[in-house]
Image (cartoon, rainbow, N blue to C red; front, side, top):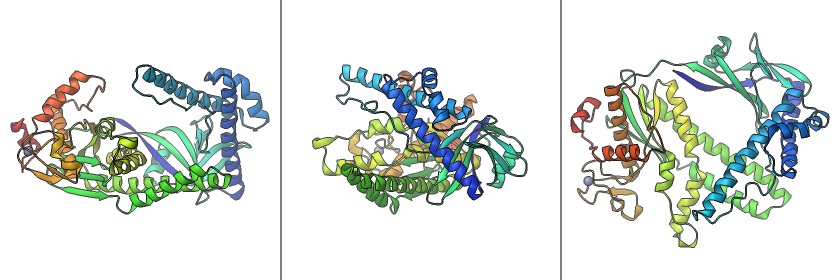
Length: 440
Ligand SMILES: [Zn+2]
C-alpha cells in the first residue's frame, strides 16, 4: 500500500539566499494578486490559457518571474476562480430551490492571496543534490541550499522515494524557510493480524478528543488551556475586522496567525498523544459531514445564548485538521485511521440500544439512557459508540478480507443498512473482537 507523507526540511540559507527566496515568494504572491485582478476585470474568467496569454508578458517584465513560474501563476488563479464559480452556481441552485436565502459573495471582489507559500514541481523547478543540498528556483535563477530534517525523512529522500511537489514555507516569527516535500512511501498492507487494537475517537469542543478502546482504555484530551485562548484571539480578530482601519488590518494579520498556530499546535499535541497511545490499531474517526448535520443548531435571534456560544466555538475549531493529523501520525505507529458514520453516536445507548435525543437531557454533559438508565459522560459515550462501529468494520474485514472505509457517501440505502446494523450493537464488559461476533 502506498501513502503520502510530508517531510519538513529546514533550509539553512545564507543571508543572500534568504533575500533571494523571500523576494521570490513575495513576487509570486504579488503576481497571483495581479492575475486575480486581471481575471476579475475580464468577466471573472477562469480559463487558464486565456489568463496566461493575457498576463504572461507582464509577469515576466514587471514581476521578473522565471518562465516556469509565469506559467504556474495563471494556472493557480484559474483553478481558484473555477472553484469559486462552482460555489456561485451551487448557491444559485440552492437559492432557487429555497434551500438558502444567503447569496454567495465569494466572487463580488477579486480574491486576494495572502499567504506567500510557493509550490514547486519536482525536477521542474526544484531538485535534490548530493550532500543534503536542494536546488530551488528563484527570481535570479537556481539557488542551492543545504537542508536538515528528520533522519527518517532525509534517508527517504536520499533513497529517492517517490518525491512529489514541495512547498516553500516561511516561518515569519522565526525568520526561517522550510521546504515541505511530499513523499510517497510504501507501507506494509494492513491485515487483521497486524491491526489488533480498536479505538474510537470523538472530537468536540469540551474535549478536543475523547478516546475509548474495546479493552476499556479511555482518555480525555482536553483543550482547556487552549480553547479559551483561541476564543480570546477570535474575539480580538472580530473586533479588528469591524474596525477595518489600516493599522487594525495589520494587527489582524498578526492575531490571525497566532490564533491559527495555537490551534494547529493543540491539534499536533493531541493527535500525537492519540497515535502513540494506540499502535497497531484501527482508529475510528467520525465522518465530519455527519456531525454538521447533528449539530445543526439554531442561529440568530432564535438561538439561546448558550447555543450561540457553542455555534461560535464549533465554527472556529478545525476538527478536520485534527483528524487529518491523527490519520497521518497513526500510519507512523503501524495503525490506520478509518472514517465511520457519526449519526446517532451521541444518542444511542450502548447497553440496551435505545436511541433518542432525550438520552441527553438538556443537551447536557451526561448521557442518561431513558430506557435502562445507563449513565456516562456524553463525550465518552460518543467515543464508545464509535469504537463499537469500528469493531463491526474490523469484523467485516476478518470475514470478507475487505476493509471498507464506510464507502459511498451518496448511497443512502447502504447507509441505512449500516445504521440498522449499528442499532444492533451492544457493549459487553469483556468486548474483544472474537467475543463480539456472538452478539451480532
Ligand atoms: Zn439503555
